[in-house]
Length: 242
Image 1 (cartoon, rainbow, N blue to C red):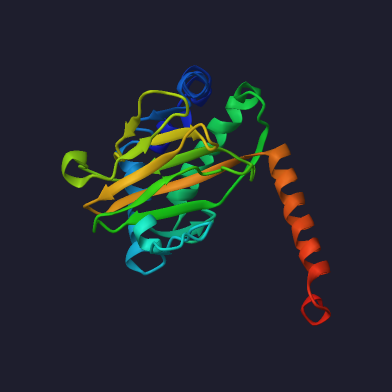
Image 2: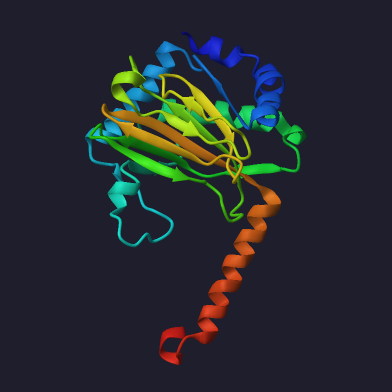
């Protein structure tokens, strides 16, 4: 698919007629065949290159869980990138399109005002039955409001390979299973409305995730962090505070 076609996609129509209403109705939505085969392949090759050269490291957990190994809870290997690095041109192009989509959603995202996001987290589940237990991306108001995941897995058969992202919408009697199919772009609210898990993967599974921040909540979270650090300094013995 030529680049000029990607550039002419009606992103505003996708944002306003697909992403916004589905986020409000169900809390999540996805777009298939987002980049097309040619550009999607370029992103995949750049991610594979990062994997094969050893750039991906074990993912870390935010909290400490006694009695369980980290790998039992989270088995992915990750790297954080901006998309401006040498050899990441296709990834950077993908991120620019996602940014435009979220920007076009604008004030229609309810209370949220988005003006920044995280770096991209490139992740690989090695295919040894690893997954990620049920969790919430933003359970404590750290500013993340939208989780966006781009999948890179060709010829994926979830009945054989597993690796489904299962969402447990808060207050609903159903679950939503999202297969990590090549060139699929997923959006969902990052807070407690969408607990989710990555089910065990039995083939190499690639994905790239970015989180978009609500400006007010993010500022409050940063201030709480500064206040906490200041309080710790005051409580520390003189030799540690210096």
